[in-house]
Length: 388
Image (cartoon, rainbow, N blue to C red; front, side):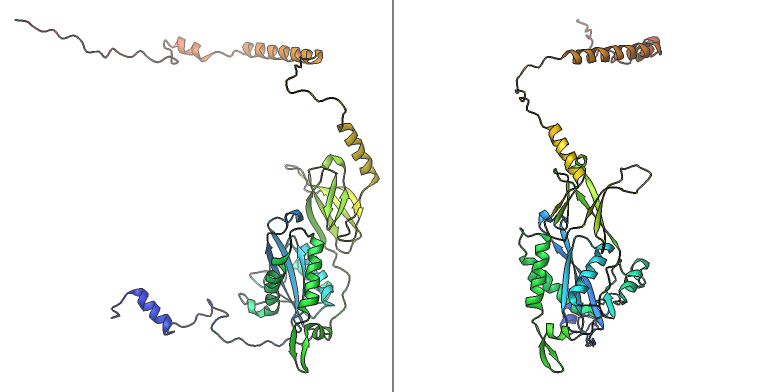
């Protein structure tokens, strides 16, 4: 091309003079005009997940907590619910709780292409979530592929929740206390933001109060299932409360199932590996206590069984010294004699079966492969010399 300098110099000159055309596929939101989308009152709610790293260890949620954020597109009022998973039952539960915190339902729910709502490839609503949308009477509208700015209201709320709320959450709070901190922050800080309206400037709370929202129906009857480890006191923790199980299960992993809107929970064992049936076995059913109440729900049968197991395991005998001589008892000597007799019979039966040592075959073949062959004499023979 006649350019007498290096290739990096040429590309730098192209960037400086802005000679390269913008690629819409690579830069969908940068370097191009963005239209302002009108959001009528009560028309749309935008939803999105936020991954929150390093939750408090005593929550038992692993390395990541999740926050479902819902924002009213017209007034930009938003609320969030902390969850331990992004699975569909957790999503349905969080959708119901956030919608009630916002004050009601809009006509449309806008999601990105999350697999629990729509098919990422086609953008069609999944069959499992279609019943949820019909139950709440909303229309699901997925965002176009790679167009996150289509739900910019909730994206901004995600940034605020991660930077201003999550970074200041202390380590000694429970899930209920962290949720209360988030609700308080949204009510005292998020809802007092000023917004420009046709009648002048007003707070987010004032604009949201004027939105026509539909009333909430009962919770969708989805089954929420989580795994828990039984404590040494034969208790299982769930949403700030503890529920009893048989004492034989301490240290085991069980599943806690709750139907949304129900009044009880079921605790079931995990199926053993290799079994033909994958159905869990329900071992306890308790009345559901209010979340975060700190209540301990125990069954009388479990209390009695735990007391009997604790008394059976306890003893007042003096512990053995580290260097004390402990000769075998008569029962131990009798058991050892039985084992010797059984081993002698086994050896006799093995001999009668005709087991022959391999050295016999080696001797019959005229050679012994177990001993190395003799090394030849490698010393130099004496040379005879003729002496004249």
